[in-house]
Image 1 (cartoon, rainbow, N blue to C red):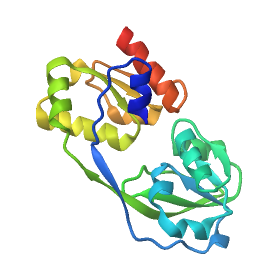
Image 2: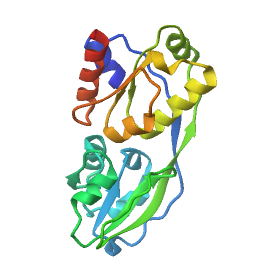
Image 3: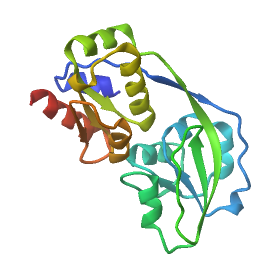
Image 4: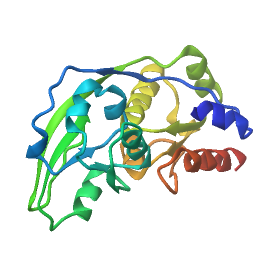
Amino acid sequence: MTLETAKASGLEAMGCSLFEVRPVEWSAPPRDDFDALLVGSSNVFRHGGFELEKLEGLPVYAVGEATAEGAREKGFMVTLTGKGGLQNLLDDVAGRDLAFLRLAGEKMVSLTPPDGISIETCVVYRTTPLEMSPSVSKLLREEGGVVLLHSGEAARRLHEECERLGIDRKTITIAALGPRIADIAGKGWESVHTAGQPVDAELLALAKALCQG
């Protein structure tokens, strides 16, 4: 979808999967034990399977708009959509008594819940690393470019693959969907930029501006 939209807007774009997402076996705990779901990725709703049905009716606190949209598509009500990561979202509800069930991937960020907030975690998917495609690695090595990052996992994998393949990161400009992703990407790139809002349209607008610049 992102590639199609990019090309339609006049950008010359290539795609490359840096990891594969796979569901894991899990069992939903009793729904009545929790006040809400805490979710940091739309992969939860793509790969959570039938166990998600046992949690229907619990409101969702989503890390960003893409995750919120994934929740709505599965019939969940979204109470709060965060900006800047799950920790910021938790800080926004500090002072309330809430029992969260966190649905997450095997690799997840550590959280410090404010007083009155409890979190139980279920892992519902895992990511498997993939190698960068030869066509993309050749382009980045020879010409550099603007790379769009939609997740922290993609940021980590890009860094690892650039190191493995000897790609000079100083020739690559990062366009990240959110501040946490930009932070995970780290330093050493030509520059790192963050979309004004954590939605695909904003990220593509940023990429277009960077390419034109």
